[in-house]
Length: 274
Ligand code: 2HA
Ligand code: ZN
Image (cartoon, rainbow, N blue to C red; front, side, top):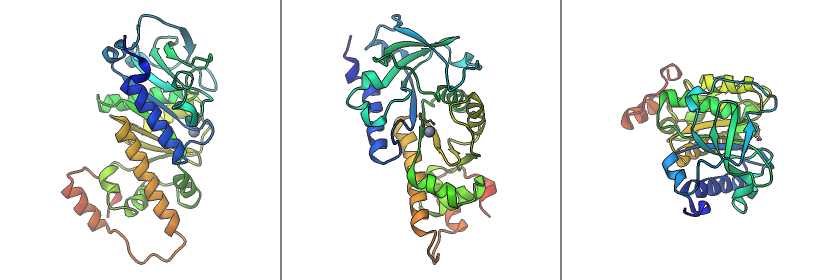
């Protein structure tokens, strides 16, 4: 059996959470990541028949939800109440590897101090199901609190088309990176199944979903892709926040955006460009 701490998926979780913390997106226990793993790869590091504990699917409140498509799947997930700041120094306490079962998750590794999965696990799993239905390669769901995007939430209209258009104008590569735009949920109570259902519904159409005045959810095939999506949105929001109070003299036009989409062969959400 290989040393689990050297596993690429553990390393990726450590590096990504450290990066996100340093970027200021995950203060205190803010943010959570779930990453769908390959069972054969996990078996190189763990006896996957050995269950340490079974944990309920508890968000803030407990409620059952439809989980059938994910039964038996193995994820590495950040722990509830854990700080991204601390993951790299102590992955075995701050992360867990769990298998999805009918009544809860089976802990195969981690949460060494008796901890459990993020309170947003129901939302994550619902998002995984939504994205997997569209893209069988989707593996990562990532939630965080990017500073400039949050600031933008307070001063920009929270309309999906308008906000997506503004973000596209704030950087030449934005329309290429997220041609499907950004979905938005109004402010809702987090940690509940209700917000999970609503987020997953948005994920039928978007890989990025803003939780108003809270943060963002991103979905992707790899950790890099998902991180890159959020990073690009956050950069655009930063440019917006640096310029929104100043007279706008130049902009990227809809014509420019269409040229970009054509050159990079991306399917841009049609109803946003005039
Ligand atoms: O887990 O960010 O939305 C901490 C959060 C909840
Ligand atoms: Zn949050």
